[in-house]
Image (cartoon, rainbow, N blue to C red):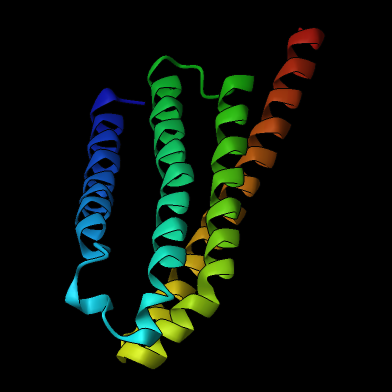
Length: 160
């Protein structure tokens, strides 16, 4: 594969991580205990569970982005059909499942936020859960295909 297409994908991955990092930094200021946003009794109970959930989900998100960059590096070095690539896909799958699980746990808090603030929190939470599950399934399918390709390649190498 040409380095241009993997370079493009690496840039897209980095550009995908920047808004999330910005959201984390902006979100940190939004969760200031002295902020007037959290002054109502309904919202003050939601502040820390939402903050903890948001930052807990960012850890596997950035791990998955890093694993994606590693996978693209393997493709650049013609190691796409290797156990290293399978391990990267497995880690991406696990990270996506962890993100989905964390947002499922956060869904009641999103509901309470929606109820108190009339925000689309539940829809956003469901979107993240659905997107993470799609990524997990896609990574699992690619992992299985890659493992089969490696097995077939090893069998062919023994025959020749």
